[in-house]
Length: 106
Image (cartoon, rainbow, N blue to C red; front, side, top):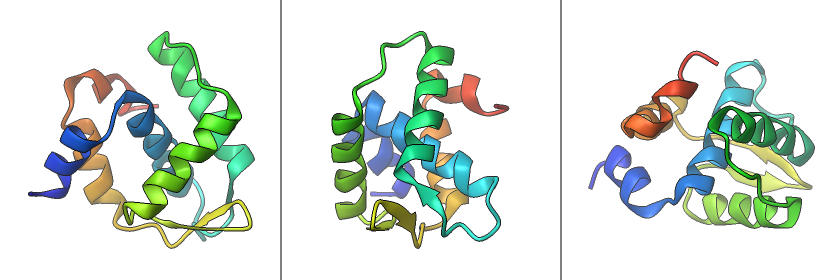
């Protein structure tokens, strides 16, 4: 199973939205080593507004981050996301789903 298929078949909408939040922050952060939980939460809430979806509370968002870490997308240390796997592959997997196309340019 390819990464795109795994993302689309195994992750729910909110999990994809949290993962996309991390990817977007990593794209805008050259070191990719200072993506805090707080920044992920802000970006996730911005994407929820664009998607016209009710955001989950911060406890659930942190649980999703832990699930994504367990899945191997990145590592978390001291509530900071680090060592993110290939951004291009993750993005391709997320944008494979038509409902996420609207986030491509934001």
